[in-house]
Amino acid sequence: MEYEISGGSFPTVICTLNKGETMKDESGAMAFMTSNIKMDTNTGGGLLKGLGRALSGDTIFLNFFTAQSDNQKIAFSACYPGKIIPIRLTGSNTIIGEKNAFLAAEEGVEIDMYFKKRLGAGLFGGEGFILQKFSGEGMLFIEIDGEVIEHDLQPGEKILVNQGHIAAMEESVDFDIERVKGVKNMLFGGEGLFFTRLTGPGKVWIQTMPVSKLADAIIPYLPETTTRD
Image 1 (cartoon, rainbow, N blue to C red):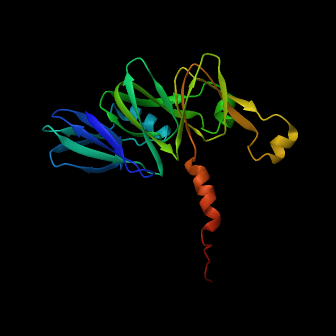
Image 2: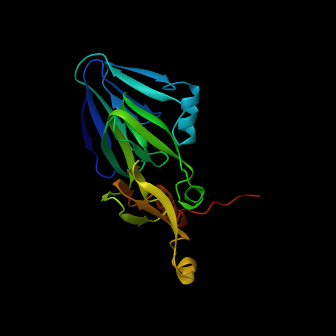
Image 3: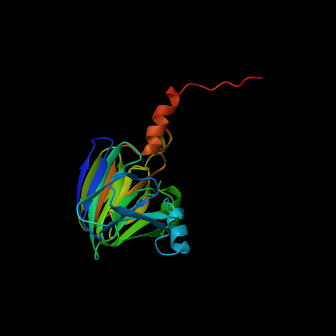
């Protein structure tokens, strides 16, 4: 499988498949495909696995697209302005992503729920208790809101991230929370009460404009609705 990512702030990944190669996506991500690709919709491993994906922000059913001849093309588009990040999974690396991070992947990539182990991180970390876990072998494509900053953490190196800005990280990265220091900072700083603390080793993908912040920025400019008696 070969791929090309284009589209700027409204990205699309176009994959070229040879006969027998299969891509899968969440429902609604496919933008176009050539005529000799067969589509099959199923839970991708049983109802329980589908329900697990639903709890992690994905859909119960996945669409599988298999090329019936060589040089077939299929495109997957992001839901929000941002980036599409390609990650190759080799069987030895595992990626943890935020809810709704998954866009598309090769058939050998596994998508599962991932539970945060610490109560505080789940309550105050800004991402919720349940995330997405990607393992197996093949190309994975995830969605990033806004621009992306990649940071390679060395063993023991720490970084503090504001809530909602973590898009994905390698499973080796430790995830916890840290309280904002100083009463004035907590009350008037506008950064909330807690930061997310990430500790290496491992790679972290940070997104610059979480869709929740984009929505908050747009809401004041929306016209108010009026009701008639």
